[in-house]
Length: 384
Ligand code: ADP
Ligand code: MG
Image (cartoon, rainbow, N blue to C red):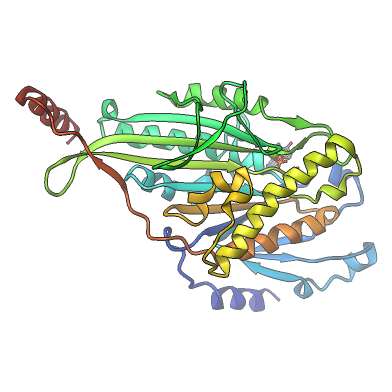
């Protein structure tokens, strides 16, 4: 059985996994929760060789005992993380390359997708003891800047927003909803707080606080169900000299996105407000799936305008951006349907091609006086 599986893996392994050419897709399986362990829950997802995911459906215990696992559905991703994978491992494999590119002025984005309780927020934000991708990325950015010994010349700025019920809110400074506008950088939320960050320590507290500002509501199916999408954007700006020795300004932007639970709104039977929210969540995720479909099919028109989420993710999906998707799943057969749904979309996302990714560079205004010119040269000499 194992020999057969590894043969299959090798056969399908040598697809390009370079960033910039297509969305890279990962799967992360979380450990069984206490509740799942206590119930009559069995593991229905298995990861082999850190790439292949086997999902098997079984209706009852007899099925499970007779299980011929090879009959299950099989998917292959850029990498798949078993329950035992650490936050650092997930960060290094999925996001560290993107951070490197961001420091060269290229944009990157990572988004977590999956049902409520599948481990999206744990992967993105994590806990104080086990910080997730958002915090590890910022830590890495500060470390890399320090190694270049020119931190004085870098500005690291953060913004953190949520899309809830088609309304955009600032998570760092909650208040009135924000309006989306189109400028030369793309779609931006007008008035969004840009927080200048100087160290990782302050950032963890800031993000935890921001996360508490996220809209979460109790529902019948889950104790707390996050119906909001959260987007953290980290921009790194600095000056360099180009090949012709002109001074240029470089900006790289990393977007880290914790999507709302992808479970069907119909799974919870609460009506009124809840059903409106459900429809709206569906609208955003539905819009996301139609964009993915249109991109995969190579359509000319991609329906980004159908939701706030897809407007904000426009550059992450089809633009000039290195994009990574992490599909989170529970291992339990109680979540079989959701897991299959999540893996189906993850599998489809592998087909999306992104455009070639150029650095965001702008020449600086020509210095007015010789003293200004001399100052800039001095600054650059300090850098190198
Ligand atoms: P989601 O954001 O997808 O709704 P969470 O990230 O909140 O799900 O995860 C649900 C629960 O499972 C949380 O209590 C979280 O701490 C735990 N959990 C998720 N992933 C892991 C993991 N890889 N290791 C340990 N605990 C995890
Ligand atoms: Mg969450």
